[in-house]
Image (cartoon, rainbow, N blue to C red; front, side, top):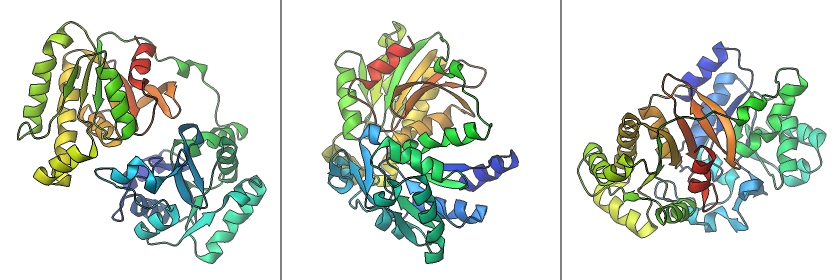
Length: 359
């Protein structure tokens, strides 16, 4: 899929490519960050790519190649209990090194903090050492802007949303990008709203609790039926009255690690994940048919399942809800607003604030 997307973009004249990954680097030794990054790097014929998931505004920083969540090493954070990609090693050099066919090196903060020229020189020297992926430290937004400027001539970057902060200025300076103030508004849409929360991260579980305290909510239980269609139908039946009154309904499968482990022991890890994703896909299609036109989605896998189920081809980016998370408008025949949120992002009141922006 990534190579097909790359080919499509190249045919349309795209000159720089950004492989977006989660700011907590969610993956296993089986991938897929390293494998996709390798494939893109090789297809482009590039010598090196920068890798940086840091996003200080969301508490994600990288120092000496180690990823921190707030003041805690990734390996000591709740991410160590992720149901699909438990992150038990905070060293991104090691994590990526176990996934990639190519050597992985470090662009330390001592270099990045010294400025654009020092960073460019260090990057230029790494390929001679055999390094193809350079994990970059970043503790502040200024570091991300430095990396953006230093990477202006690189064709491939791998990272979280924070790494993109410094890129627009490169295109402005080249006369290729104009500011578009109208992007701050997506316009109003009719219909009602719903929240679909599939992430089991601590952040999303806190957001679910806050939303459930003041809105109708329906738990998605993967053990309740044998098929996604049946689970979705049951959830919609429970929510029918509230939806009929035009209320915003929360549908969630978010659960604590013990509950997740129990489900996985019954169904298997892959089958449990697929069942939940398929259920949210069924729900999204059904909600759209019921005139729901504003959807907040929590979780990367859930977002992917919903976007695929709804046949979304392109999105217009709108106003920011929280750092790294905007409202978007689906470009298509039906008016639909989507907020696609990483499970780990956002304040406890994220859902209610997001919906208040587009009422």
